[in-house]
Length: 620
Ligand SMILES: Nc1ncnc2c1ncn2[C@@H]1O[C@H](COP(=O)(O)OP(=O)(O)OP(=O)(O)O)[C@@H](O)[C@H]1O
Image (cartoon, rainbow, N blue to C red; front, side, top):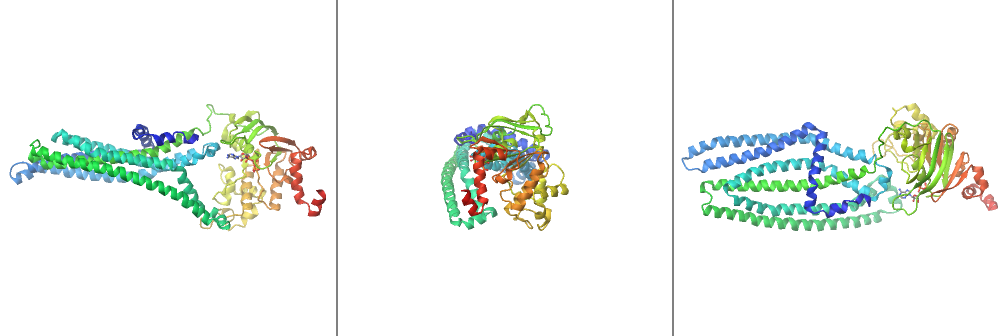
């Protein structure tokens, strides 16, 4: 899949291949941190690096203390000689402690800011990408990993700084060890390398497994929700799905557990092997130290310094490897975040170079040779549709399920870009107009409306969210959709929260939700109102009110109505019949009935359902 491009490459990338991409990621993470909070980023960076320098001072001071203490001469003299270095050691330790506190303090403030910035950027993108991005199955998997990656920004920043601090102290101990004997450094490196490599290798394997398990993790998440959320609770019980869903959970979770156990085994083997080799090599270092001491290559007086230096060097090397491993792991997660934003960028609406003009009131809407092809579908959902709709007309789109009505409406609403053909608003292609201004002239009521967990008033106000909330307008719109009285009966009227999962929240019936959604569509008295199945759940009285409101627009504003209740399209100025993505009939109700085609057939079928049984029999 398009979204998966690069995933395989990332799974297959070797350890060093992954490292090659790290500098770019580190710069990007630092940039986010810097933009989130300059002061705290500076404090964290300066304090972490300074702590590394202080650790170095501390080590050098310790060495000097030991050298002074192990020197020849009377004890009081040796202690006196060691005092300046001891003082330096005390200062370095105190300063290091202070820097640690400063880092912690700044980090506490920086972390939530960076997290918020990284996460907001993610949602700025997901709320802007075109709808077809969501048709890519791997979009959701990529998004899940990107979301995890957005939490890694701060860890990556901290890891990189700690790594740099570790490198600073490593340089100091390197000098200290080399001064004692260069061979010791080589031996130390040999002792640390296997452990470090094993840790990196294990981290790499872990991340590969993480990448490969994306779809399974998301499947589990879906099952978690199905088993624990309110929306699915009724059906789960009414169909007796408990055992079925738990069985699915066991299967998916079983597979995931098996993968994780195999991973744990591999990781334990790798790290244990590394630890054993490193342990043996460490023992070798001490043997080498002993040999050097016995051979007189290292003065006896400096023996303790030697042990301290070797241990410090080992600590520094371990810290550097640990931090490298951490940077490596966080970098890979952050890479998912960056990669997602990169790829999602291709789905962002194209910004024209020059600000396009704002459209005037609708005079004429022309659909020319319009087609739409969903990815992975063999046949197009809409094919070669050409119609012209004049301002003030009410037109109806009818046709059997899956005939392409909603897809056509989504293109006219600007929600989907046509695969072929174009849509002209007053003679100019839609893309040639200012998108926001054009959107403000169109109001859409979707077939699959979402139950927004806001108050009833906000649910309707969302139809014109950029305008300050005006209760009178909201009530007028609700009245048009037969929602006003029903809302007044709610415990808090328009201020009732429509989410049962919160205290004082309420839920509505399907038809009540549909009235609220239709009210949202009426709020703006838009030039073009597109209503996709607005009455499928309405009772006859509410349906009548709604269609009176739609008829009230006729001759004044343009309306595109999609419905299967053909009695409601009788008054439409024109009816377009769709079949398998194509426009197959067009005309008024009377013309289409007279033509005796598909519309007439569907209409008669439905009308027969309203006849009393005897009359229906006679008609047959
Ligand atoms: N997101 C999608 N991805 C792939 N195929 C889709 C998608 N949405 C719709 N389709 C397919 O496109 C075709 C047209 O669907 P559309 O929703 O436009 O039909 P419709 O006429 O509105 O149907 P209905 O009367 O059931 O609402 C159908 O075959 C449908 O399966």
